[in-house]
Length: 178
Image 1 (spheres, rainbow, N blue to C red):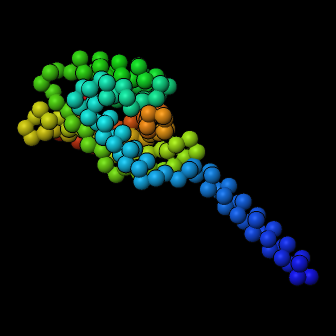
Image 2: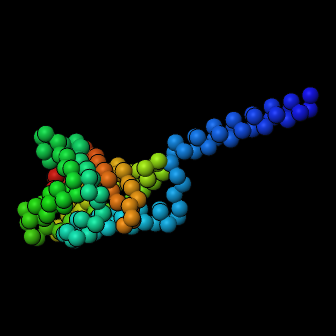
Image 3: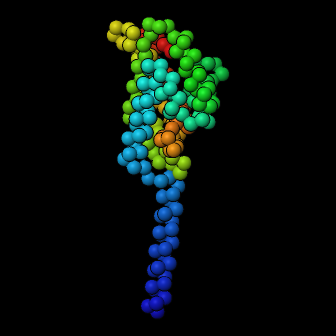
């Protein structure tokens, strides 16, 4: 009888351990402190690339098959979705060329939350952009990014970035500056 109980307990413990291990796998591999630091740096490099019009830096943060999208579609009535690293970079280069030279933009991201996934990680972070050519600086937009991140041989990269803009209640006070 004792042997039967031992087999029963080992079987239950094994089933519990297998279930626990399987549940851990659905959340993805654990991220290290180094991963979190590299992801935070990736977000900062995005902001600086866009603010200082650094094409090479912007090019270095995306996967080749990356997707960038914005919602709601305040900028384009049909929505805005750009696919492919080169297309995303070219879109930004065109925006930089169209922006009046006196306009200076600064992006702040905060409240970054990173969650491991089976493929890498996902993150959500708030973004606020200011037009700093005004005195005092003028809020331009706010919202949040939802990102799909993957680790590549060259480090962490953005595979998908969705910008969801907040709908300002007082647009007539601040205006909309893109």
